[in-house]
Image (cartoon, rainbow, N blue to C red; front, side):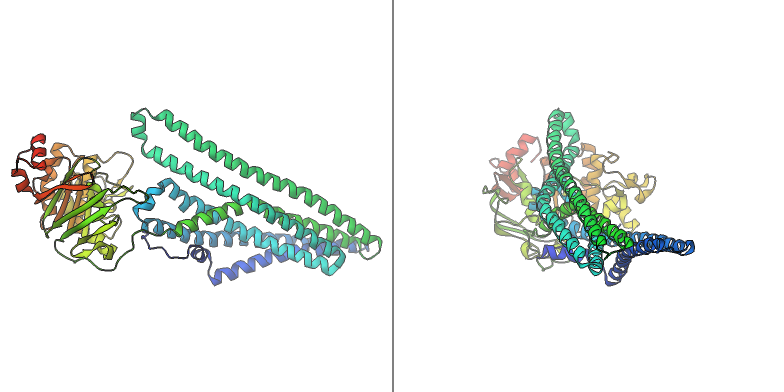
Length: 585
């Protein structure tokens, strides 16, 4: 499986999109040759028709006329072959370019911080990375196959007709310019309509993703009716946008059909008038009629591509907007200490989420020496998880600093930070992949022996040994084949593998039954042995091993000290919480 690494975006989004779509010189030359052949061969066919008509009128023999007919057939077959080659090359180049664009978008989105992902649902991003890119790919194929070839064919027809009779050629040129101007005007009306359609599609994808992800809770709490009503609303909005888009396309097609009929009538009238003067033969008149019909086909293809063009423009605008997003967190370059436990210092930290003036944390001061463990206690919403996110540098504080191993996290190298700080949360993400990939998160494996050793340490050795394909067994993330407890233990195994210097356990055992929790207590102890730790837990019994306690209330530390001292103090908040929980001091 090819990995897509998160990246720090560049400052020029739209030029980078065009660079990703640009083919190499060899492929460009091959495509140009195919397009030239697909354009020149149809232009030559009416010339044989003219010779056939004029020679037949002049009494030419059957053998001569048969050779002209066979030549016409050969040109037709060669023209179709050239068009097929153009279609194959255009599709190949378009999908190569758009695959590069899709990888760039995925890496870019993964490199953005949580504030961006909080504003955009996964469904919206899927529509950007897949739906918009597919729209661009479809248009690139159509542009190379229809637009470029059609413009060349139109130009060739006008040049040939001008060379034959400048009066008819001038009329044909003016006619083509008027039709082209009308199409350009129509495009200004069509693109905003397509943009609304793509936005409505993204909203539908986002709504579907949210509702499907929460299907169990929605069903259990009787929210199905509201879900159906909301889905109907976004579906109706998409229908209205698509219907308006289709109506505009139909109007364009009807208008051009009338214009083509009028143009054909004008050209036939001109040809008849010139024939009466004796300046044209019957064969030449037939040739001009064929060229007039050839003008219609490129314009019809161009009109047919306006919807793809408008969808592609809307998609490109949305892709450029995504690539223009800048991460709020600027990556540093300083590595954390490569080995050993890491000191943690939280210095007078305050934090509030973007677009929210209310402070979630205020005046937070915490100091942990290497190897010490801190227990965070507080009600739901007191700021425990937010503080843990600052330690992981998922956000930056608005005031103060968080230092790990003596390095301000604003200056820390993100790769070094992820390698030296591990987190185990309650919400464990499993992937539809092998047990090995779920443990290593698709990084190079340290070897099956090491993986089995880690699984034994967290109590999953017997489970792994009983899997039908061992570590190659594919876990189905959505099937429920892995219990909540097993998923939590796999998360512990991931932390063991990284050999971190600082471990953050955020509600790490709250989903485990008492038997499973007891089974991994020793594993947690081994994980924290020789490492600095931060533990958030509602079960106060899980804080028996910590060195220090910080009690949070409404974003502030209201009590902080060594665990044994706070537990022994009858007036401490922590001591009263232990009494209420029935946990011995």
